[in-house]
Length: 428
Image 1 (cartoon, one colour):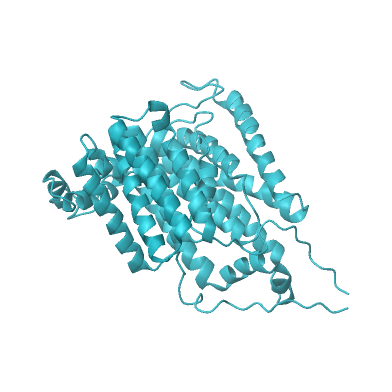
Image 2 (tube, one colour):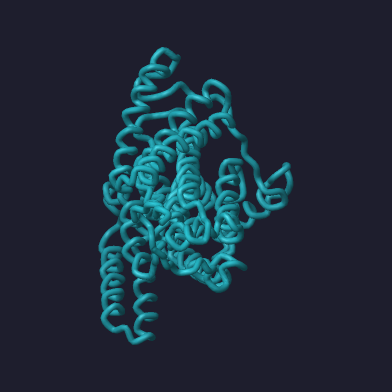
């Protein structure tokens, strides 16, 4: 009996470069346009200085890293054909192991053990889905539930008798992995700090650019640098190495990959374990860089936000980083300034008008009218109100997630074999 399968051929152009959701220059132009509009809104509204401040940019960067690492974990798993909604549970494992090792041995060991804790969850998910063919969603939900129970049990056995520990939290982790500032830009090595100087000038647009750059280049954790380095390394590994091609082929056409000698089981195992390790490192980051202790429930759904960022980025590393940054910015803004959230109403109104003009130029009348209506509604809301209700402010990151997913999923394409149960064909 013979079997036929599509040949494993690298799509044209993907061996040379990673194809981002948009070209790099187009992304820069669009980013500059968005920043220009934010600067304009900031000058039109009182009390909205945090829209582009260095404090907001720094907070957004810190808040984006756990989402980024969880999304990177989802990227690895789903590129191999395994849906991983257990990222939240793997992050929970990372928080507990990161706190335990961080308290016992130090913060760098905490980061390592956090990644190992998440990798354990990834291994369990791989055994269930790859070896036993369990439905990927069922396995992911089970891991999320098991992680909560396992960490509660471990905390009650280990943390209860330690000073400051309990069933729901760990003792404080002493020390830090360290921070750095870029020399000649943000005061690194006690040098001149030009970005902060330009930000204080309050120049239109230029000070806003300087504020954002200053926030992203001053007092940055080494774990943040590692996280973004892992994104670049993943882009190189998945798109420019033979093993990366095998991994992606397992998610697109596992039958064809098998006929060409790819060990699909091994590839999926490696991808899902690495997925758990990335998520676990994201959980450890929450402990080491944001809270200094483990607390039950501190992941707060960031594993699911990571999946949302991955979908926003169309299963590509660059888009994933952009999505994580967007969610981190929305979270940082609602924590720092309610007035700035109110100013966002005007920004959304202007964005709706711009989208309506673009759709109208392409003769898409109905979507253009919808965008115009949304923009008009937000403009009226901004005009008739002086502030946004505090409960709505807290919802900003989650509303942003829903809006982004509603828009982004219209043009995304998941790996062809993502989520499908696969079994090696017996030799005949």
